[in-house]
Image (cartoon, rainbow, N blue to C red; front, side, top):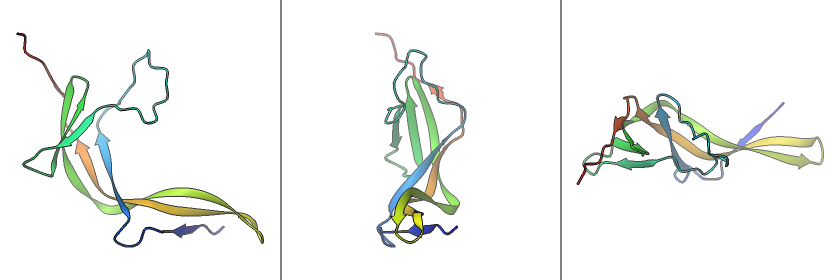
Length: 117
């Protein structure tokens, strides 16, 4: 079976993606009944002094991570089912983006405690 891979974005125009790697599990509350698709779980920011250091705030917890370059880049693909007159249905993979870096959070979260007035 032949599967064609197409890239319509060009050499320099492919969207750049990144992986966010967390240690542990991100769970929703028991009362949550909706879809987790497009669910905002926190805020990801990089420090002004360094583009390599990131903070990820989830609720009252803050994680500090760093940007790591992957040894081998990964592709983000979209599967397309096409109707072919000769052979029936064919499958193609379209390149959506490329992943060259990941943001790694490997330390335990630091609790954010607000001061009392």
